[in-house]
Image 1 (cartoon, rainbow, N blue to C red):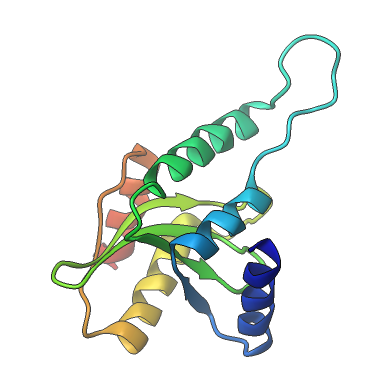
Image 2 (image 1 turned 60 degrees about the horizontal axis):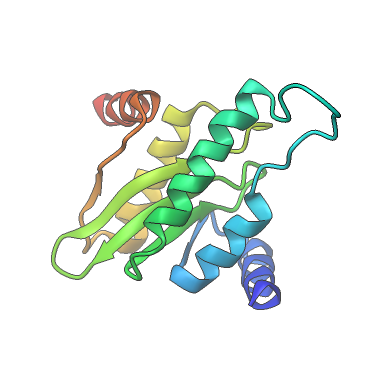
Length: 147
């Protein structure tokens, strides 16, 4: 399954699309690659503070993916940010959790703006909303929609 997911991601990247949509199984495979890795230390904390937050997000993502209607949008630029999303035929698309690339310098507000613009162009027949648990994500989402 990981090979199929990586093939799909590579194909989308080759098309130069700004975002792509993955279903539940493909998203599960993709976040396995995204999982934070512990430091190789003999004592003390095995995660930096940034990777501790990433681990919390990773665990939350795994829990969200128990719902088969959850998949993701992911950015096909250098950031490779994943936006876990619940896909509902009647309610539209609800972003539940972004998995930010810690090495990416692009502000979350810009990522949300780009996603919103792409979603409107490509999937405008579906409503895009967010139900975000992390305060900094909610703040970035609100800022993106104020502009």
